[in-house]
Image (cartoon, rainbow, N blue to C red; front, side, top):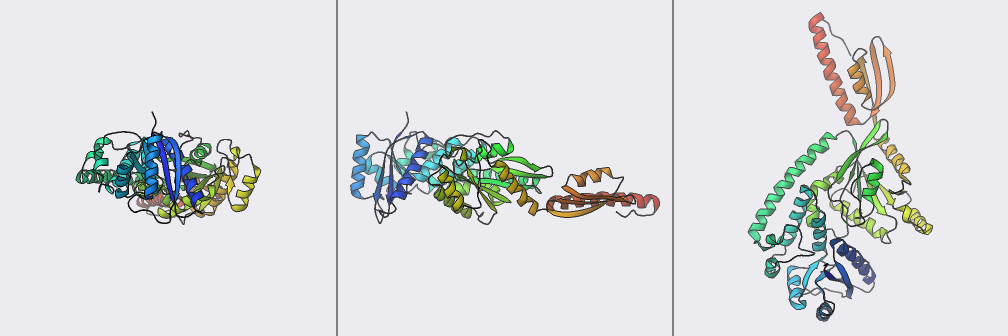
Length: 432
């Protein structure tokens, strides 16, 4: 049986009341993803939060009566709660209380499938709970289940600060190892253009990833389905191959513990050559979602990366005025449907033009008899000139600087060995 949930938000003015109401709608979607059922949503307008309970005393009484009347199991605040506020609210109202950050952490725990994701989520949850140990003796000793209690497990909630700290140290060591593994993987991809999909959660990134790469990563109309990065090669043309990565979705007020714990995953974003910022064209709050993603990119140090804004799900937009407004407001954006493929070729053409601007030309002079080296040079990019004269081939290749640099070293090394062998046998040197 799902938890019956009451949502509460605090707005600092009547003008911001509607923005808070929209935020509660998003919170309701998060609750649904976590398996809960929202019974009611309340917004209190209050210039200054009550340091003891966030909301006013009258609202605390009202919440208690509503919880009794509607048999509420869980109270979720859209705003961050201090340990003291959590304790006071639970004691006054008599039901379990969590905040938005705890709910997001719970959803991450729900969707964590791989060992890496589980480590990242557990570390984030423990760091979040460690910061709230003060005054939460009752919370930390409670045995139970449901939204807000997933992750490391109820027995972990009973340990003291020292035990939690020991576990955090162990998890951080595990993430350090993951960091090294990911660094090794990225080094293997050195020379390939790195494109990373970013965007608000459930914006359609994975569907677009599948369309571009013919992959079959899991797609669901839920929040935070993708936690682990998925990477696959994408051939834009015969001589242009790049690496495309699908990453975890962002959300407004993403808990700082998650940002820190997912540093290995988010390093894909920081190391990208191009970011595809995917935005949901049918989302009525799309402008705010775009701003939230930009804020998160700045938070992870990727604000200066080249970005293509991509509006997805255009197959679901039935009002042409909606697309017209977006085109006027975001004139450089591209509009696609990952489901039908509409606009995808335009997106690939834009990426190809950007990639080609990053390419350079290099010339190689190789003995005609060294077919293995000729083949190596041909594979390094697009051959724009290939001339043979006096037993030598002069080839001009256009490609990525790191790839051409690596091939240059291999060619020089091979020809150097050849020269030494010839010099030893005949007392003369073949000049490349």
